[in-house]
Image: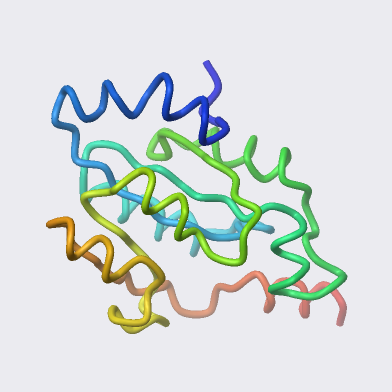
Amino acid sequence: MSKFLTLDLFLSNKLYYLRFFNKKIVFTNGCFDIVHIGHLDYLKKASLLGDVLIVGLNSDSSIKKLKGVNRPINLLNHRAQFLSYFYFVDFIIPFDEDTPIHLIQTIKPNVLVKGSDYTIENIVGYDFVISNGGQVVTIDFLEGFSTSSIINKIKS
């Protein structure tokens, strides 16, 4: 069974069962363009905060808006497939908007996670998750790992 779902498919098939069985839902998002050990460490730590980890995955067009015309390096289907190989990632849902706020409001995660380069109050969805009784957590990154630094190293 694929972990890569549209939001509609997730809502119709999965979310109901997760809520029925009182699963603690953790949500994070990102581009995950060139997946590296820093990403894996982050996702693994995020997964430990609940029962189910849902990754909102930026679409190719949203990455172009965020990172520039030369990105993404890997297309959405390839990025999703790669993430799906990790046992600690339960579901991957793409989004085309600039932020994942629609996903967050629809899924209503118990835990919203971002990297520690964000302040908790500036995380998209913070107010919504807190007002619904959830928590917002930041996770420290492994030092020295970033997609941009990998791309720059390849270029030089």
